[in-house]
Amino acid sequence: MGNRGGSHGPMLGAFHRLRQGAMIFDSGMPIPKENSVNSQVVQKFNEQENKLGPLFPIDTNGAENQFAVNTNTSPSQKAGGSSTCGKKNARRKKAKLKSPGADEKETLVVDANAVHSNESIQSYSRWLTRRDPHSKAAAQRGEGGVRMAWGSAQEHGTFATLMLHHPTSVAEEVGLCVVDHSAIPAAWNLGALPPMGASPDGIITMDTAWFKGKKQGAPTRERLVVEVKNSSPFRKHGNGATFEFTDRDPYDHPPPYHMPQLQMEMLACGVTGGLLCMQSATRGVRVFYVKRDDDYVAAMLGVISDLYTQYVLTHTTPPENTFNHRKDHQALVRATKRIAAKCVLVEEIAHRQLPGEAYDTRAFV
Image (tube, rainbow, N blue to C red; front, side, top):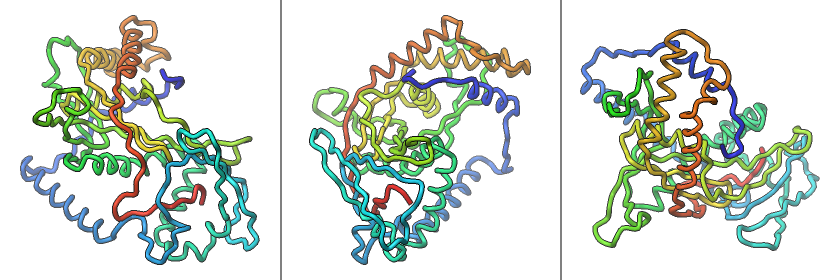
């Protein structure tokens, strides 16, 4: 699906995790008391974070060349194996830029000495002490490690962009949402199921009438799960010893392999719709509306139930391509592609600077 090759690894991972059984943490408190204590702990944590100020330092010394607002350009810049950090006679590097929707090419001249000078970043050393080692550690894990680190770092900003674009919306911060087995319709005729849950990047309540084509009138507010996907602009270059920075074209339709995750999140949160926010490094955020499909969810849970009853409960390791020959599994794959194709692109949000934040424009540390 979506040219992403599958492997046997995820199924084996699920099999071994399910064999471990549920981990129960009993606080010994009544549920209302436990919720109250949790709220107090969260409030204290948030107060401590607020005292630290923005994660990224706000420039007050005029160092706009080092930290600046991101632009809607699509750079392609290569990084060599050696660094020019701290060199007085560093050569000036050139990177070609192509603005979205423009055929002509522009050229950005990057002064490596100015960007990487120790003096220019001295005032931000506390922040860079945390940020730079994390970036280098991700690079050591290869392109996959960079993609994971990039996605995690950008999730909060993407969700904040959505919130700011819809100021009347109400956002909820959530963790693991557990599927209520008792709420699963008996008509789905499912066998035994393992404990299940999903962790959306957030939940938002907002007016949906404007993109659902409903007549003008009272706003229709709907609670939606939000899942964020960020495309890393870093790719291996040449023999793999270096990376290049090149932004891909935005997706016209979301890849099918994101659909099972969205559908499970909607089931776990008890909602009927979700927003898939796909952000590129330089071309903004594309927001897709995904509708819950209960027939699809029932078929998906049917496969999960078979994995659980036929293999986990019998302590039998599932063979490779366990369900590929089954017609119901093949139909599920086709349905996954169909749901992805039916997703509605509801809006495109351009990049903007978030309040109280600045941006590190360096592609490489």
